[in-house]
Length: 477
Image (cartoon, rainbow, N blue to C red; front, side, top):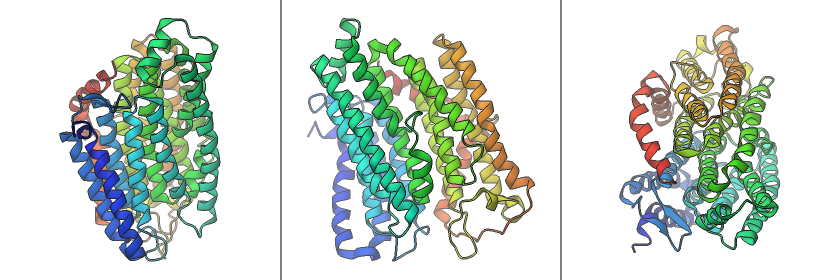
């Protein structure tokens, strides 16, 4: 039982998902609301269980997983984000025709996979967790079977995801072949004993490429805009938040724990990937007319900024990555909950930027929420989205990467254009057809909570959240 105590949240979610799957088999579509709210309760219970589960037990199950504060911090972001994705589906899917109990079950199973990803200390558990998350995601992307865009999104994600998994497995096989171990500490010891040879470097590159696909890092981002646009909007909100956190934290653990002695080798890759993601995410969003495609490039852009902190390495750099992802989740979920309010008079979802024209005159509160999230995503002070960007730039400067930090700052200026363009459309263009009223009190409360976090009031979180991220980062050193 001592072995299972550190994975109590995963046990809760796994058993709960199996039970809800049986419920879904008997009640059918009528039980969609029951299974959804039960899944939300399970995710909240798993979040609370993080407090009781030991976060200092160290390696468990023979070193396959690590019960540490770093993994606990990631799970504390993943589980609530998954719960919001389930809540967001209420009222969006057509009841009794599209919304099935399986939706919540898939989210739960994906959350288990992400939980394993952030705690993995072996190449075996890394791959198992990543594939469990991915298999659920493929189905979620094509969830609307009657929608051609959703089917196309699922197929693209599946094909490209399979390719990325093959690349990742090849990298794992090379690392195992040249180090003789699957354990992160063993791999680090092998890199530390001698100068990495060509085989080890190739293994490093291929494995990082596989992880980069899951985080939609340039040049492995090609699936992101199409999948984000084609997938149902609640699913897109999920993809842009929880799996992104899991992939970034998995990459951070791999780089710091397994590849720490080879920092000079992977730092060059990380610098290129960060700048490429920042600039491509900023420039490619200029001509977008679909709000979900624009937010897809926004997610690529934000991942680039998080990678600046990872490239800085060290405890300060790792802490800045954790801080950035915590604020990013609040901003992303908030803006997608606003996108869910974009409905025509008949209640059908609208995704065009043109439909936001003059929103400040027809729906002033929704317009204000959009503006706050856009300003925060752009990193403009005094909104809280400014602070995590400042943290990653400081970490890069402290690591002696001053030109890298300057290039990142310039990228911030370029990326701010399309965020401000959305605000301009909302406040200065002629009003378009007004949106229908959406009465979802729980979603409204979540939007308000996200606004509080990303507004200037969020600066009250700097000290407690900063101390927590420092301690979580310290678990890897």
